[in-house]
Length: 438
Picture (cartoon, rainbow, N blue to C red):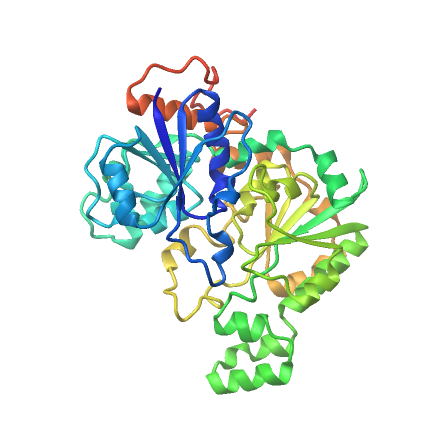
């Protein structure tokens, strides 16, 4: 029986990989999960350390759990061909650099939003044996991104230069939506059957170290803010302070919107991004990530009437779950930290308010800037953001590929093909790669 390993570099990766792990278990493969014990055990992301207690309960058995304590140890495991294939969100180049293992073990890269292309780079993508991506849109977007980043690079027009036959599989994490009963989640959260729910994924004020994020948008003391502006000589932000364009005012506006629509305000964040006190006061309930399979974000999406966030990739999960989406859209040039290099190309092609993009898609997701949210949102109704079923089908086809809950099965079939094995009769029969979204 073939053997496959999944790299668990952080605890939350289980929310992305669990449906695929379960599919391989169901089909009788030997499955191992390799936990990265190089992950820091202190700091803001220490809670993501993948200890053995973080493994969820699967429906079709349990994988063998192993830990590796260094990239060198992982390299040796791969070099020794301990498994037939490895599935990871990272490419060999990202993990090992240019000195990648030479082995018969196949490496499968799994897309997770645009980070898969941007973080792994063109060279990293060329180091995998197979890339599983959401839809053809992302392949073309990556091509456009790399062309713009290095316009004079040779063969930029050839997609194969940084992909080795990418396979469109959809977004496997979303398969677990079939495991979630909204009635059970409502009972768990103390919601009545008919209660409307506004789901807020709050702005990460605690982790934003940019001047705008920490001093302007995240600030509440006008005098202190103006002194900071004068000291930093950033006079363009004076109007932001004078007009009260800050996170506290945005949250207050969202609360008024909830009250005017008789809606419950549910705030969901991550442990590395503590919920501010004024948001806790406004919310009816605050929660953090509690489960990975099924994952908390899909559980709360299952009961939401609308999802509100700030350029979060939860927009794709929102659309899949048939939940209208509101993206509060500050100019990201404002809050890019001086310690990070602003990526104009990423902003140009993806993270923006352009019509037809993932954040501004009529009938699915709406963008609003901060002044408009503060001024106009309380006067709007939930029906103003109503989901258009036809628009949702187009959105899912463009950004997520499929709407049938079989993305994990497509990954399984792609790995089977890569290894040259006969299809496992236990696998799902119909996982065609057409773009039906019925």
